[in-house]
Image (tube, rainbow, N blue to C red; front, top):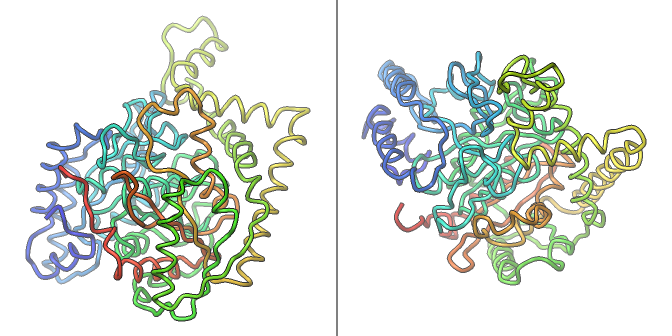
Length: 483
């Protein structure tokens, strides 16, 4: 049963081939057996999962249907979950049990999804490798010496290792798409505002967006259907109708205009990845797509702009963790200042501290105009580049990452080199656009992803292209040895 996709599970449950309780017990046993190798989970919720599975079976017995009813998933450990530890993979929140469900958690639970637990991640979603977690690094199931990507690496590793069919993630600068690429999954970052951020512990509020990680585009469509929708509790949620994301998966790609930016194939891209991306382009041409060269001239400024804006917002968002209201508190503080200083120094890891310092500096008097304001101007120029491009093409295609997964610890002494791994993904977050990564092949036995970007609220178009591509390729069907 562990090899079944979300869509296959839905059909199996509908046909009474197995029950949700049977499936849940099988996957929980598999997690107990295999996850010690991967470290992909922070918290397992066995009792809750079995309770939800039995409830889903009862709902089906009463005639209720639904693609997610009884389907096992997991949540990245920054979605608040009632009564369950929600740690953000940080010592700061190691003892925090959320008093409510995030909207994403509540919506998926209402749809009948069964939550097996909370997955590991980079601390407060800050990282590209899933190495900064207080609970230790997550391993890539394709090679346990390599990273799975971050910050949603726990969700990606768990799905890639067939511990469960799908999981939620969040994407601030590529944190769904990049781990999807490095673990041979399909990962979708929706349009900013498409999925509620309420109850999702923030890293950078104008960039964070929740989305699905799964093995196929069809599964991502199913999970996104359960997650998306307007939420009056979230001021960044957009009141836009949610289409049936599965309805148009089989639409023809005849005449689809695909833009290929020259900037995506410049220095820094592994030549072997470039070849695989070009192979993907040829495959889409066979399906009727028309390829058109385009330019995104301000992409070169994306990395510096992002690493001013994101840390600036992080420094503000994380100021609430001060040892007073909740979270880690140092022992025997001498005074209030000592309480603040030691609680934050003990509670936050090095990467989080680094980004708080950078962000506070960028927002400080005398530097706000020079750094933060300039970064926001660049952000607007990047958005304008996309708007011009989408007047000429329907989607944009390129690599998801410049390199395959690197060895654990290889970039620890040079954080900037890790930041550069997000060079192709962060532009979508700066512009608020939807983006998808899908499997495109392997380099040295490690997976490679191809990225698709679309205009606002065109997630269905991305899923259609990815599904058609997956009907004619088999990269997404391959699983790591031993799992």
